[in-house]
Amino acid sequence: MFATVLRPGLLAAARSPRVRRTVTGMTSTRKLVERFVAGESEAHAAAATRLLRETDRLVTIDYLGEDTTDPAQAAATVDHYRELLHTLADLPASGETVRPLEVSLKLSALGQSLPRSGHAIALEHAHKICSAADAAGVWVTIDAEDHTTTDSTLAIVRELRREFPWLGTVLQAYLHRTEDDCREFAGPGSRIRLCKGAYREPASVAFQSRAEVDASYLRCLDVLMHGRGYPMIATHDPAMIAAATGSARSAARAPGDFEFQMLYGIRDDEQRRLAAAGHRMRVYVPYGDEWYGYFMRRLAERPANLAFFLRALRPGARR
Image (cartoon, rainbow, N blue to C red):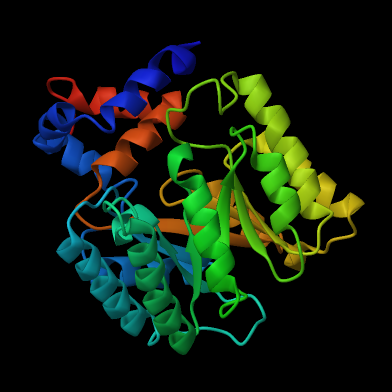
């Protein structure tokens, strides 16, 4: 009940400039953000990646930013990803079929929201990053954002996969359309990260109750596990983790034929347990100074995160 009541407000706050100014100006907030964000520079992201690789975890790195309406900023994001990929090319990697290092992109950070030609600009920018990633031996996954971008995002993914068949994308189980999207994208060579969804969406396009979202997640999970692609199960929910291992068994998938994904700073012990048990476990590592929207969505996802935040704000709490 706690999460159901507060989640809509937190997701609305994630896109409120006024709340953003208040939250980002608080010292206690900045300190708490370090739990979920690796740092502000690519050097911080690389350092976090090295530590995670020491425990046999795979990594996907997100340079934080979204909803860009400045063409120069979108181009600068491309340049930043190129620098990041240059840094990642120097990190130890293996020759496995599954690449241990990956970057995640939000197309709205690459200009998708620009008027008139945003789709074409985002496609061009994403192509440049995919080319640099391929040269560095690093994978790319295109993140999902709110439902208004889904058609454009999946069209760009289809186009890019003609040249980069290893390109992954994210599908969000809370959208009514996602089971059908899973069927389309479960073909040979596909990489789909299945998550529950982290944006505020209307009932006309998305399931609203936790039970409905969970049921949709399980249906989508079954489609992907019995498909011919590589499922990436993004969840911290113990029930979904158990369901994924069961679905993999029924589909005759070995532990190396799919992977789990979790967020940096959340359920670290469980991440280590899954990796030690022989599962592929990839950690989503965000970094950069545009952390506000990401941070607020993490608070909305789990009451424990919000409680941790509120304790940090109490007078006399340790900083």
